[in-house]
Image (cartoon, rainbow, N blue to C red; front, side, top):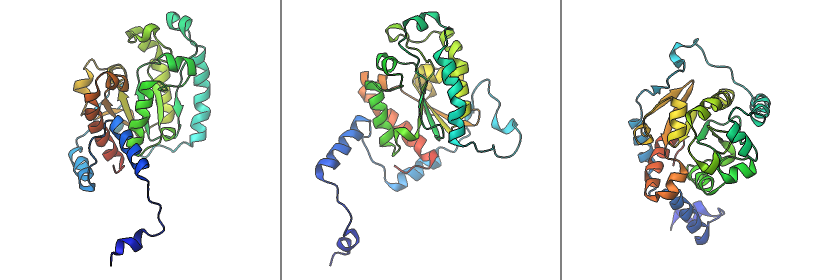
Length: 261
């Protein structure tokens, strides 16, 4: 007699269509293999090196001893609102302020363990006021869901809060003008992990000139947060083969977070 029938009795069985849709979504996100349980453990063991420091930040081991006081997510949300209003009225970059429909502050849970930091809003984001809602945003959502997370449980923001004309890369002056905003957002949220999406985000947060290809596969520290870098979803739309590299980065990130894939 097959004991598995008794064990599974009464539990809903997913339809073939539902399973196929889930697998198609995973493939879109770059998931081409599903590691066994032992695979996750091996990734954790391989990622025990000490994170590199983010330039300009005070290393955690040079701060006062003892755990940081926990801040209620509702309190974090209250602290974010004046900053949101300040961003909405900002005109430090006159070209961007004149061309924007609205500023794009950030979205997600203020109590999130992880923040995804992108480059700048695009046309869809400028119209909606929400980061990562266009094609690149839809792909990011698939990546997040492939990591067994929900978009509403993470926090998503950009380095720039206004859309650059023609979606051009941000200038150094524009990044400098917005630095105080995204730094304060991250300080209020206090995530355990930050995932930088693309060259602009990684170089801005880490104050580095290294390209994203060299920043991948390494851990950094930014304040009390551990930082990992990967390719921007918009890059994956142009270069689908790079999805495998992003999935490798996500496996490393999730292993350190203790999320089993």
